[in-house]
Structure formats: C-alpha cells, structure tokens
Length: 546
Image (cartoon, rainbow, N blue to C red):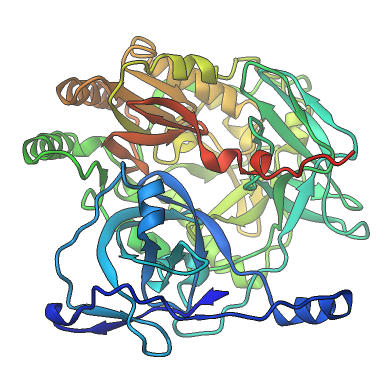
C-alpha cells in the first residue's frame, strides 16, 4: 500500500486533532498466479527509497515529491532517533491532511539536520505522526526542494537519469589483502559500448572496502577500478557484487552559478551543533567559533594554502607525456571557461608552456558544482609510486575510549590547499579548448596524491594524533570526556590549522555531538558500533539453499 501524500493547511492551534484516526491509504488487491505477473510488473513500480542521515543517524526514507511536508511515525522515531534529538511539542498553526482531505494527527515535530544525496539541509522540519501504514518515514518537498535532483520538481517535469550503470566485481571472488589497494576488472555497461566514465562509490558495496573514485574508460563492457582495504584483515569480494556506479563523463544536471552563490552566503550561520547543549555551553561554543572565524573558508576566495610540504612527481622516464584535448559539449564551454577563470583568479592554476599535457573531463559533483578532472593515467604509468601507509581504522577507533563528545572537521577542498613543488608544476599541465595550464596546487588524479596528502596531515597534527584527535586524509575527529576539555581541544586544533594556513569547510563540520558517523562507524559515549547503512547488504544477503 502507499500512503496518500500529506498536504499542509494553516489552522488555529486549538483546531489540531489529537485522535488516533488511521492515515488513509490506497491499497491494491493481491495479484496472484503466474499469468498476472507481467500485469503487476506493468501496473506497479518501485518507490524511490534512499538512505538519509538525520542528525548523523542513517535512516531509510521514501522520497515523495508529491508531499509538501516530511513525516515520521512515533514508533520509528523512538527506535532510531530518540537518543539523538527531541520532539518539539509546541503548538503549530497547521493541519496535516491527506490528498482526500482527511486529517492526519501529529504529536509534534523534529528540527534536524538532513544529509541526503550529497546535500545538507539544516533545521529541516519533520512531523511526528501516529501512523503511516506501510511507510515509517517520508521526506517531502520541504527537504527535497534543496536537493539538486529534485529542486525543480515543483515547477517542471523531472527527467530521471537513466544513464547511470552499476559496476560489478568479476565472476570469481576477489581477495583484497589488508592495508592494500588492488585493481580489478569490473563489468560495466553493455559489451558493445566503449566510453569515458566516472567511477563513484555505491551504497550496499561489500563492507570494509573503499572504491577509489576515478576517471577511466569502459572497454567492451569492462572497466578497471581501484579497490582499497584500509582494515587490518583480508577481505574477499563476492562474485558479481555491486562495487560502484558508472556515469558518462559528459553528464550535467544543475546550474553551477546558483549553487556557488548559495554556498558563499552561508558563512557560520548554520553550523551543525549539538542541540542538547545547555545555554551556557552553547554560548561558550559560539564564542569559540566566532573567535576562530578565520580558520573557516566560508567563500571560495577564502581557501587556505600551506607550504609545509609540497607535492613531488618523480618520474621513471624523461620523455614528456602529452595528449590532445578532448571535445567539450557546446553547452558546457562557458561553464568550463568560467571555472578556469575562477581557478586563475585564485592562483590555483596558471597558463603554461609545458611539454606535458593531459586531457580534461568535465564532472558534475553532487552539489551541482563543476569539477575539472585531469586524465593523468599516462603520467601515472611513469610515476614512481609512494608507499606511505593508509591510517589503520582500528587504531583510530581504539583511541576513543571514555569519550563523551565528538566533533568532525572537514577541510575545504583539501587537495587544493597543498602546494605543488615548483620543479614539478609543469608535469601537471592540462590542455583545454582555451589553452594549456598547469596546477600550482595539488590536483585530483595523480597516483601519489592520497599518500602525500596523508603525509602532510600527519605532519600537521603529529603531536595531537591519538591524544585529542584522529584523522583519515582530510577528515578530522576530535574527542573528549567532557565539554570543557572539548572546547580546549578544538582551540588547539584551530591554532594548529591557523599556523600552517589550512582552512575548514563549515558546511561539513559537526561540533560537540554525542553521536557521529566516522569511517563507517557510529561513535557515541556507549562505544563504537558499525554504521547500519554499511551492513545492509550483509544483513539482507539471502540464506543459502544448497
């Protein structure tokens, strides 16, 4: 059955019903027998369900563009969010009604941070209802209107993207040793297709593995993808397992200029802060954040830069690697020009006369912003590899014992805050219809970029590691047993970032939370547990019958 879409009507507080009337629903009769199977398939489709994080707690929710509001049952709230956020029972001047006009009783509402499909919606309102029949949580247009994929649903017809493909592991199980990266040949689009694709992670991938986002080419239905195993034990990827998403490199979705404009206007006004802090604690935290406003990059032109460590590219051959640029669709030419101008203005790139040249691929990020991915595969083939180790997840988690409060910090465009070594800048040159440029900051796509960036961050935080914080690449976690020491530790981290010139992205930071998600685990005062979203595939794996 499917719950009718809730609608919002203004009312007086005293008019709101508190009865236990069942929410009206449309139900289909069972379609039995082999002969009617095809009719059922044609008559009924799958509802769009996605994993959203409500105040860092992962939940499965129905995405309903026909609903003005978002709703959740009391039972679902008690089992998933009761320890994370509280119901506001203050009277509201609204009635909830179903599409047929029948009132839907509700007991209050939540004001939560929602992370959905790469978009963060802060202070989103979700009504708590008595009952929703077969659906426990519905996210409506009050939230979906902020998600690029759905932002125009209220005014225009949405064209769903059917070009995304699933990358699957080989027909035989694949062993990924502990603390290592392997390349496997995954099956991709139809065998007759050969095209440039972007490989991205997918929900439901085997637990423990990390798919390395990259640009590659699908050849006769197969793609080479990198799989990392940062854990301390070997992992076997089952045959034909879903390991990633493949998207055509030329795909576009939303308007870049609007997305950038919105991002720059946020500042520190909508930070993710524990709502359960006392008034005095909140004032102390607000004071700390205001005093350290300079360590946050609230606008693109505030991006930080450090010269503590510069990236080197050591080659095994002196012969320059040069390729012609690839055609860019006419609809993207102006965006590419504008993006190049922005990078030039901020001195992240400069015009070049280098003998090296890598082609670019235009990629649209989940936020709607454009990213220029350089195809450095030829350059990487002749680059001496860096063996700097990945951090051990178990060591990071072991350090958290006795902690009550947690803050997660995310760097603003982390790679672009690290400088290239002047002698190696020309090796990063890339070619476009508008000329040849090279990077003065660390670009995406270089094979040793993750290792060198990890080396930089460990050097920055060396004396704080495993004492007051842990880190994994550009993700930082600060922990403490009480509020006062947490404030002191945040100040110490801010001071260190200020010393080296690195800045944070305020939109992706969470402060003084009692529970956070980090490295695929949920951390709280009670201890460490596996993120439920990461084990869904294992829990739902069918029981063997032979």
